[in-house]
Picture 1 (cartoon, rainbow, N blue to C red):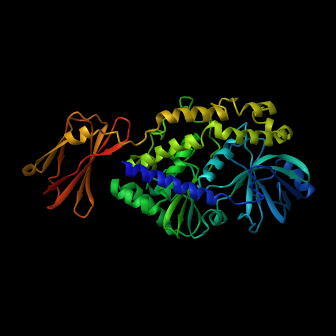
Picture 2 (picture 1 turned 135 degrees about the vertical axis):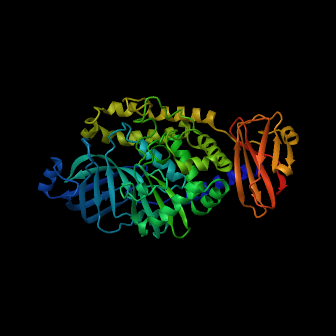
Picture 3 (picture 1 turned 180 degrees about the vertical axis):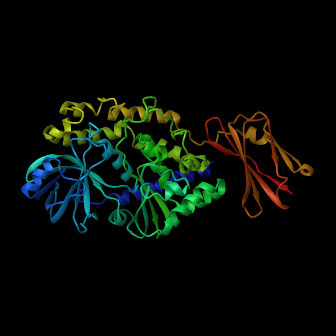
Length: 506
């Protein structure tokens, strides 16, 4: 157990070092401590069309762009503007796409100016983004910006990096491979009716004839189990990074993701590593924003029982069924709350964001249109909630989530199973009947996992048993040879502990 815990800690240390190396990149569009100013100059008639909101999503408006940050200035001679039009979307402030037509030094060919309409702090998405990027997790960069057209203030927006080849180049230093955008319905089940649907799994970059590579990945994670699944996922998926991503998503209350709502992520197959990477996106509904159910409090939901119990999330459920991965998940959350996810650490950052944004919120008349928010609501919303769809103020959510998660974390410990249990467990073989009895005596546990492994190290059978004073392991259908019975129990805290092994011959 000490070795496993040390491995977990070393893995986390390595990923933290990787994070520090990946996030120190300077770009005029993605300033974190100041607001970028974007000026677009367009024809006056086009501007009237824009203000009247009569521009369709397919209609392009062309102009010249000037960008100014705290320490830099830049200009782009030709850009195109289009307005995002979503079905059923009656928001007063519309999101905007700006396309440059050529690569920029920031590894972008355009940006998405997002109108944050459901968050009075305008800061939840950016905070989630910061937490992910600070841990070296590839996800689209964000930053606040003021947007002007023909020197007229349009509003305060959140710049979003687009996920495309330029994104891959910046975050992976590589564009080779396959990039899938995964939208609502992308549950990672190997159902061709789903994965062949281009509206659910959209190939953004690369060539994948009949989606064969995606199909192979889905088939593997769905059909492989236990040791075979573990061996596959370790070789073909960025598993440790995914566990960290899942932990941060859970702490931030990001329910509109893969693990709960089968939505808002991308998958990248990197030809350089031959591994798939999970890329989190769309984390607007975080830190207490709740459109799911008033019966769910995302600040208190059990971190070890977080998934939707009525739908299959095969990748997460299988990963968290593995004792070592589940321990890594819990240890990371424990350390992350201690070092990062708490108001003592995050409040200074949020206070700085509030002071930075306030003057522009006061001048952004569209801020008030959707829910009637005022500048005072903006100030107070960092502490308190103001709408039915927001269960907690931003800081209040962090406080409540960190407190509840501390109680829910299950840490691996050497004392989980006393030496008395190890000494008193008995294996009683009945070779004539191809049976081994495991006498558990006074052991208290939730369930027992028994693996039968052949001489080549391949697991040929696994059994899961409920608590019992004795367990009957049958191996009458096995071919002749020598086998090893490996057993683990899940204790009352949810941690898994190895039991002594036994050799059997068939």
